[in-house]
Image (cartoon, rainbow, N blue to C red; front, top):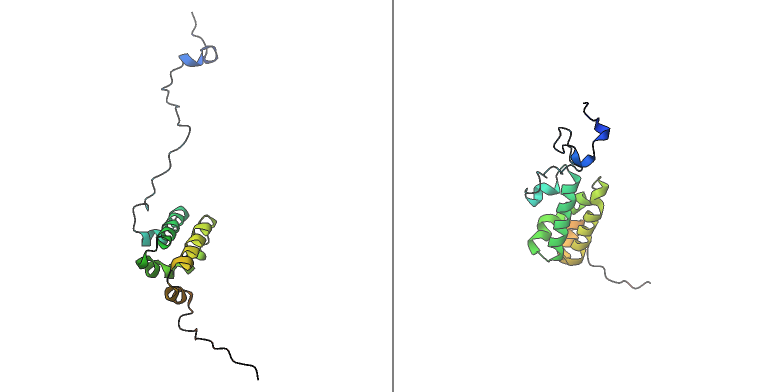
Amino acid sequence: MTEPGLEDVPLDQLNSQSTFDVPETIAAAPDDDADAPLDKRLVSAKPPTRRDAYKEVAALFEGGNAASFEEHGAGLKKALEDKAPLCHEAALDAACAFAAHAPEEIVKDVAGYGARLEPVTAQPHT
């Protein structure tokens, strides 16, 4: 008697533990930077890590964390210049949160206007 061919065996009777079992999806590699300090994640080589760090900074700004304005405000220019499209929205959200919630003096310093702006008084035309 001959053995039935593979095509003749019902699928439910096939050995499901064959050497050719491959998962349908591949698990994502663990993000090595996820546990790094925020300062290191802001300059990570991985765009998803930077994006998540920018979101965290935006949340700090929105929460009114006074120390975060001085600590992370200066890095906003670099965040807004990020070349990775994945990071653009998060960087813009962080900048908007900074502008909306930071004290005016810190916003001027970060924007580079603190030393250059002088009070302007109205002069009548003669």
